[in-house]
Image (cartoon, rainbow, N blue to C red; front, side, top):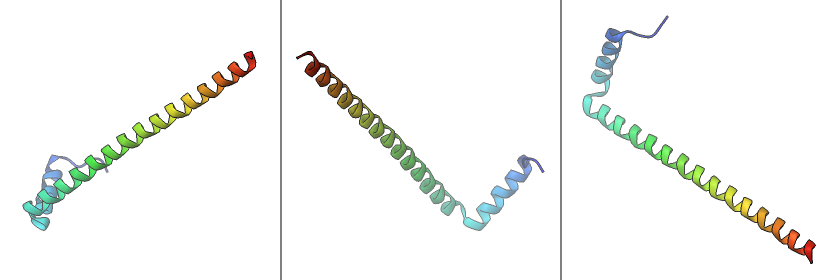
Length: 74
């Protein structure tokens, strides 16, 4: 059983429109689009936050090594 052809997809679309109605289907599409946009924004923000935390940890480690080297020179 493979992918449905164009006629089957049109039939499924017609049935969905009859069941839900065009206006409700539009609202569902808008809600789904907003949810996907929110998800993408959250993923992007999380990635940026993780990168910032990693950079802070790297700076902290470099400062600790630098201080240790300074103490060893004295």
